Amino acid sequence: MSRKSTALRCGIGIPLIGGALALGGCSAARPPTIEMAQADMAVRQASDSKAPDYAPTELRVAQEKLLGAQQAVSADEYERARRLAEQATVDAQLAQAKGEAGDAQHNAAELRRTIDALRSEAVRPVTP
Image (cartoon, rainbow, N blue to C red):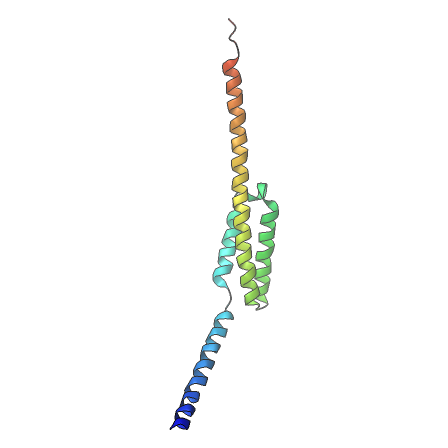
């Protein structure tokens, strides 16, 4: 009975393990459609923001990584494409954040200049 149950377990267990490994391998071999779409959207949003003015290097890096991801998908290198797409998304978000920060600093400096001008007007003596 011991030999029969061992043979039965091996007869069921091996195909079951093989099937699970095959399914796991198939999921890794799928094109990273979601990651590519997210990267494309992030790069577009960054391009439409203040990133070109205040973070051109970061934006260019994101665009290059997205292009690399697209080339990797064309070459069926899905894992590389997924990694590059995720990096492109992060780089584009960084570029957009730096762009927004740079714009906010520019606006703050402009506001300070306006306040300084108003202060100097307020303290200037009035001549009759």
